[in-house]
Length: 346
Image (tube, rainbow, N blue to C red):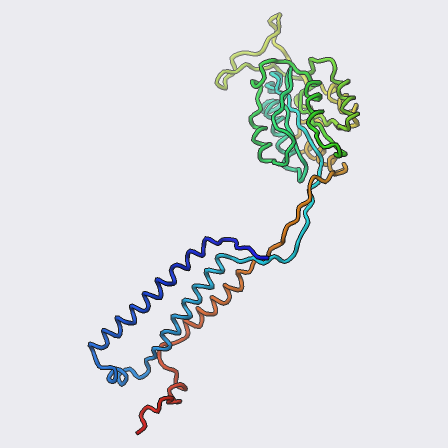
């Protein structure tokens, strides 16, 4: 089996007929010009070492070198062996909190941007796993179904913001319930729901839904984003803070990280809780736990391993160029001494 890496370079071969035509025209022009200067017999006397054969030979070397260089650029590849590549991993669904409390800036630059960075850095460390994305506030909406396209996942991730859901609040059970329908592979042994949130839950059934998720084989990882001290929720216009969110009594609302809520969810499924304050440490803990899990084989594909062959064509081309450079146009002495046509004899 073989394949051509860059067949477009074959178009260079169209230059060869042009070069041959140019060479023939040049020889005709030189012969015509020489005939005006002297007769063929006189020219043979005046230029006894001139060799027409060597001129053609040098041009032939040049054409062959050009041909082999073209094949080197095309780079033919020969299939050497058949390889089977298996893709296996864990299904991971990221549920990102997009409620207004995620605008708090108690963790730089704010909770929502920190959450997206945590998820993005985690994706960067994944290999052959499959991922999905959910956004939730008072309701949960699917953003990206289970896929192996990490590039698409990052694109959808960057589109998450706190204005995408009109109904505000935080109902973690909505996200867990939606995630239960994300895992479509019944043979998958490990399913992970990674909740990225400040833990503020305005619902009442998160723990019950988490226990149901455990029955379905779903492990919950929870990443806490924010601080226990908390901070106000800024209301911005064109990037400038105009005021802060207030409650019904006119007091500024202080939103705090509810780590205990997230820990309960993780413990209910024998999962993992990590603080999102240190991005690198959080990602390392998640990846370490994922590596300990059993991997499910998603697919197995067979590929032919091809090896480059351009070096052979390049080597021949360089050898021909070397011959062309060191091959002189005058006749070789030992050929002249052979006197094959009995020149000069009476």
